[in-house]
Length: 223
Image 1 (tube, one colour):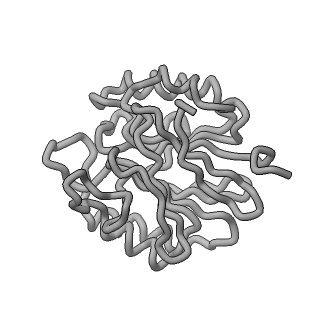
Image 2 (cartoon, helix red, strand yellow):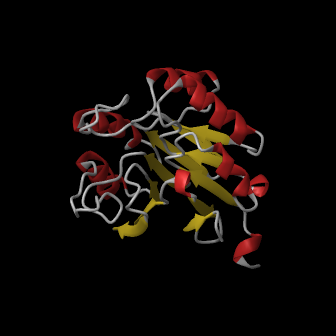
Image 3 (cartoon, helix red, strand yellow):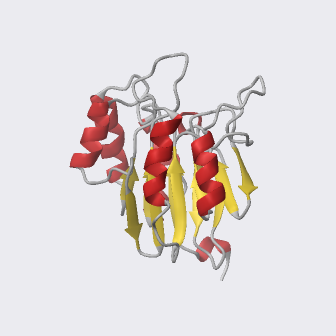
């Protein structure tokens, strides 16, 4: 059985309203599900969120999503109404356990959904009580601090220390993040693969292959 024969999930982040790229994802209709890690819109309007989610629903067998720092509380409420919201929630689906935390730490741009380290630490404490009998995935729009996934072009790290601590203590199998477009990368923290698939507005996304040893691929619509 080759890698191409295993079931898989698609992970998109920093979509910023670019729905035209969605149809260019290879084998999207064959995915078991789609997860949006945050920044659904660019201006943070509810209509942007609706447009993206409705486009994804045309392809998705299962769809989960959460806000990024660019998305508003109206977007968060809309995702909750659709019963697909991951932000501050854990969702179990088959052999997967998703734990979601959206938004970002404060930025110089005063975007719509920014939170403190204390907020992240409090939310993540609830996830720390969950059993790890399945493949566990932390979906955090804000990457953990001090990795290849949270580094600006000038080399400065701006990730979350609370997310980093949770990864070290809880050791999920994967942390899928975003937010920092230029830090498309994956690396290991202990036993956890931390993956920033890159911004989907530029054509980048992630693919979780559920082989005997699940693995995350960094993909592009241009292949």
